[in-house]
Amino acid sequence: MTTPTQSSPLEKQLGRFTEIQVGGGQYLDRITSDDRKAIPLLVQVGRLIDQIYIRQHWSGNEALHAHIQSLEPRDPKLDLGLTLFKGPWGLEEEKFIKSIKDHDPDGTVHERLHIPHDPPQHGNYYPDDIGKEEYLEWVNGLEGQAKLDAQSYYHVVKRDAATGQLYTTPYSEEYKDFLVPAAELLQQAAELVSDQSLAKFLKSRAEAFLSNEYTDSDVDWLRISKESPLDVTCGPYEVSAQKQEMDIETRARALGRFTGRSC
Image: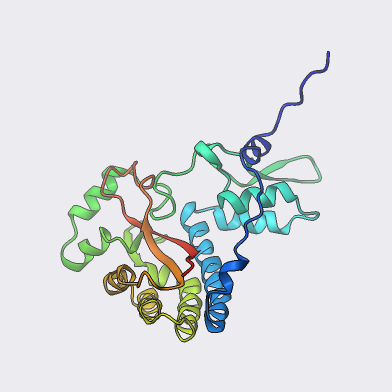
């Protein structure tokens, strides 16, 4: 009798997907040449937004991605898992990557990067060690703009390493290394797209990435014409799974989704 081979957590996760070929070339004939030029720019924006999501997902996520990308030879399955899930947890929050360990010549093992069994419910929007009571006590002690920022959709809460005090940082600063180039790309795309309502949204969303003020661009997104050959969504949007541990209102989070709509 042959004993069936037990699949690894990663193999089980990847086994739930099937690769398909997606067409769409026929739709490109319905858009202008400048619209076509805008699409690669918008794809670049999407890739930058992906990097923001990776940073938001978990405090150790960027270090994990850097480690995996440094491996030689590369593991195609591991690369695919990170591409699909953007972190070490798959569907139903199953962990498929073990903590990263270093082995010394004398046999001593050091844990370089600990990966929790479950993803932090507050992601990387708050310090790893924060608790609900500490957060609420801190917020209740704030006043004016400081309190609004602490409860804002577009700020992260951080801890000062020297004093231990909590403070807020706007998305425009926390993710500046991605939002500044993304804003530049949106402005370039706005000069190319044929639909003026879409162009207006792209410009206002680019401004929002830098100013951290999203209301106007949210309104512009709602007003994109149904006749626009391209449909673009990028920016902070709510993910209801986050912040359950904090037991406060779910905060909007920066996710990017770029889709094409035919005429």
